[in-house]
Amino acid sequence: MAHGDGRQRSAVDSFESDVGSWEELARTDPLWAVLSSDEYRDAAITPDAEARFWRSGEQHVDHVLAIVRHEIAPGFAPAVSVDFGCGVGRNLVPLASRSGFAIGLDASPTMLRRARERLDACGIDNAALGLVGRRIDWSSVDIPGPVDFVHSVLVFQHIVPEEGFALFDQLLEILAPGGCGFVQFHSRSPGGPFDGMVRFLRFHHPRLNALALRSRIPALRDVVMLYQYDVLDLLRHLTAHRIGDVVVERIDTGGGGYDVRLYFAKFDGTTEEYHLKGRPMHLRTRP
Picture 1 (tube, rainbow, N blue to C red):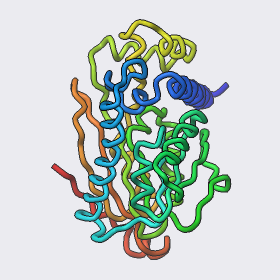
Picture 2: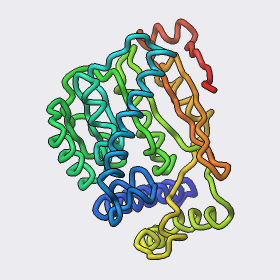
Picture 3: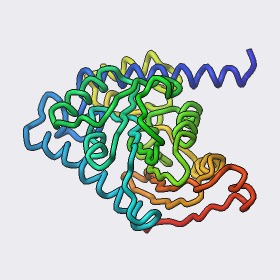
Picture 4: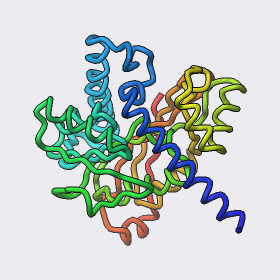
C-alpha cells in the first residue's frame, strides 16, 4: 500500500473514531461535550448552569452577526443559515430566530435528536436538521433557498484536517455569492507534554481513544482531541472558493493554545468575474 493511502486510511479511521466518541458524549454528557466546563457535566448541572449554557449561544450569535455587520456587510440579515456541527442546538436556536430559515448539521444522531427537542421546546418552526458523515449530502437536506450564511464554532478542532478541509470546502461551495460566514479553527494546542502525548496516542490508536473516553481517570478522559489547522492553508481554501473579504481574529485558549476565527464574505459575482479582477481578497485582523 502506498504511503499516501496509509495516511488517508489513518485520517478516515480517526474521523470515524472521533464521530463514535462524539456520539458517546451525546448520550452521556451532551452539554459538556459542547462547552467543556465542569458546571455543564450531566451529573452535576444545575438549572442556573443550564440557563447560562443556552444564553451563551444567544450571546455568541449576536456577537458574530454584530462583527459581520460592522466589519463586512452592514445591515446583513441572513435568509438561510447553516450551522455545521450544531450539537444540541445551542447556536442553532438563536440562528433560526435571526434568520429566515436555519439548517443544523451534525454527525451524531443523538445530538440531532436533542437539537430537535430544543427547537420544539423553544417553538422554533423554521429550522431543519441533517446528519452528516465524511461529506455533506446536500440533497438530503431541506434547503428552501440560497444559503447566505454559514457558521461553525468549536467543531473543526475535533475533525482531523484531512477530512475537515473537505467539509470546509463544501460549506464554502454552498455559500451563495455575496453571502457571509463565520468559522472557528484550532491553530495551536494548549497543555504540556503529557497532554500532547495523550492526544498523539489517541490519534494513532482509535481503540485507545475509545477507552480513554470511557475512562474514570480525568487526565485521560478530559484531554479532548484537538486538531490544528494552518492559517495559510485556510486562506488558500478561502481563495479557491472566491472568498473576497476576510477578517481574522485570534482567540487565546490558555496554556499557550489559541484558535482562529474567520469572518468572511463571498465575492458577489461569477467565477470568471472573480478571476478577471485578479482574485481579490481584502484581509485584515481584529485585535
